[in-house]
Length: 256
Ligand code: PXP
Image (cartoon, rainbow, N blue to C red):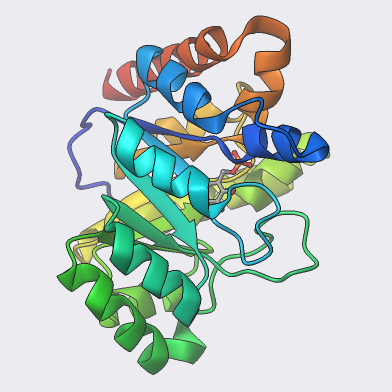
């Protein structure tokens, strides 16, 4: 499949969930996710991503309130397709809403959303969010069926799950990593071809970001856990700036 998109500037959304994870470990007010979001802005992030989970294990309702009111950057609110979350999103009207699957017992968002089997409900679920002015994206595996279904329900954006690619890299399985990368490339091109904006994320690190950043149809990466972990050693601004440099390098190399 040939790439048809121009190599536009790649946006970086910084996910600050795990600043809240550390805060919640003690139940006090610090570290404050809003302060992290402001630092991310200074370091060149284009947006802030926060996942309000059903169990509120990290980001909480007051965090969303604070991010909506105290932040210059657009907020991308990740949430499950539940009535409770829909009401919260409609109240806040964030710049973007990313619909993710959520299972209470999982450690993180382990797979993409099963859109194809739940089209009718999801179409009705996202319609009011779009009418309220939020840009809706659907977090899915790099799978043609899911991309087509996301398109049919009227989502303007898909975020492709990079977790399997990153895991294969961590396990040292080069063949599996390259197969996942090929799938991500093909499916980004396919999604773009049918008119969807393409984002990507989950599990990305300094070691895995460049091949994803080089995919021309990908317009935005959302990165969290690695950056917050790296911030322990070098500070959040330095960690984000380094990620930004790698993304820009990958983009420039791909354009050559
Ligand atoms: N994109 C989506 C839709 C996610 O659910 C997550 C994890 O919350 C991320 C990106 C960021 O993943 P990570 O924290 O592994 O960088």
